Image 1 (cartoon, rainbow, N blue to C red):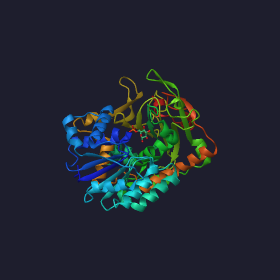
Image 2: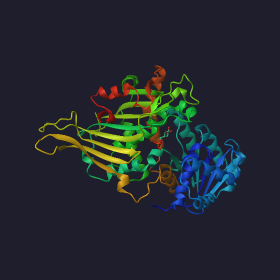
Image 3: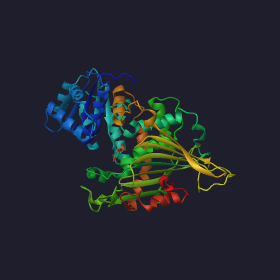
Image 4: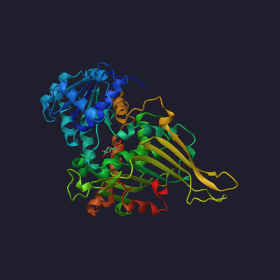
Length: 484
Ligand code: BG6
């Protein structure tokens, strides 16, 4: 583990849900495991009138609510690093007070966990008081923009005050152990590389399915939808890691250059391909784990007439020598049957069959499950024991939790926060990557709007609308769970 330098971490939106549920608990965990230097500081900013002591108590209560395990003595030590300041994003004197409260000789990290419409004002005011200096870093939470234009606007004005290598665009999927392991599986082994191409692979599925509904985030979600919330960022980032060429090193630009090439080689979508190859859905009421659950439009803060999609699946193609002709099926949704994130690599069938074989449509399959468990399963055929030549599918099953029983698995936000503190940009999204991703999804947004496409309803607790299965069936393929 590389050295963590002293820092002043300033968090805008310090009383918000993400900060109290994820960021503070991750920082506490980093402290608990000895990864935060003792003389660093974390200054939460918010509009609520709280003293430092009240904020620490507030953060502790919220962490407990989020079921974070707290050791009281360690928390007391951690709380010494915490501070709180009242700040209005538009009030310059508050920024002057902030400046006088922090040591600008060490790394100053400004984490913007606010609504994106405040980013501009915050950056301007930081610059006005000289806090965009050489040791400043800026962390931007998603959603970064609503479409290509708004993303570019945000990037343009942020670039007025901060250089690209000072900007850390968060996609928390990149901080997950399992996602980094995906790179390790591909580029730390010889085994897969030779097969990882159009000659041997017939299709790839990438799924991030959630079991929960929108919960208390109806307001936010209704303006966002599954395409912007998950596909434009998390799913396309996973696609990049699955499909990229081996980078020659792990430094930020080398890795990000390769990811960018994948996004740039995606076959552009247009009206017809959006109509044929993209399915949107919205959950209606249903049964989840035996309990009745509400439909999306019955959720709090969601208008009854909402046409926001809570599910999206699509077929993408990458136009390069490695992948031409191999369909990539991407899918995400809320209130689906299971919570699971996985990548299913379907290999081509053997050229001719000499064994009698009972199971239909079998070909080798590699399933890399990222969560909730982290496993790799490789399906192949083996001879059934006894006086027969018949084959049957079997699989090799690797469970990383069982493999690494003594090592701690760092949470996504903890890893990313430590990387910001160390100034390591590899696991953050560069501007050109982010805009290339927006550019690719843009025709979906415009076609849905122009043709007034509304999502198809699906029952809560299912795998989405029937059209999603039909999308694959047309190509003679099935979603992974339909094969089991
Ligand atoms: C967030 C989305 O980026 O990712 C949420 O805004 C979603 O809607 C979450 O629930 C999923 O993340 P994870 O780590 O729970 O799979």
